[in-house]
Length: 230
Image (tube, rainbow, N blue to C red; front, side):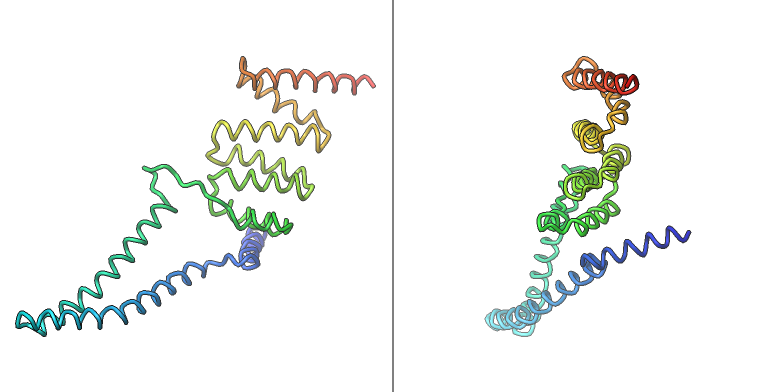
């Protein structure tokens, strides 16, 4: 229980450190309310005045004033609601439409600036918020491999991307090849790549991917045999 609490506190601290607190949504709502208030402050008096003039022409100035004010209040509200629905559709589409590909720009920009620890934390937060999306898992694995030299951790995230997300076949194949390269090149432990190669050789038998995995597996086994004899 203590470990879970510590993890939660650490997660909250990371969000605060990166400026990703849950108050951001409240701030957006507050800005929208202020913006609407300013629009209504201008539009309602103007609409009431126009309505008064129009109502005077037909002998009903009070009715025109009320109608003009009401329309001036309703039209901006309808426009704001329509814009909100459009934004929601673009950034949070329903399952019936093509899903919007998320872009984890904060983490990517941190990595580009060389702030790798912050970028890793940002990717972990993204993973906790979108656990089915393989992209932040793979990005984190590559960051750990290429920029932070944490190869064992990188291997762990490549595996998690394959096992815990809704990963496509193409992404899974790429993750497997990157994992194999990580074992054979960066870690220098080709024996760990053997099960991965065997799985790919069986799954993609008769294809270029399967042939590549079969040949690599044979090479790894030859190397293991020679190392055993030495």
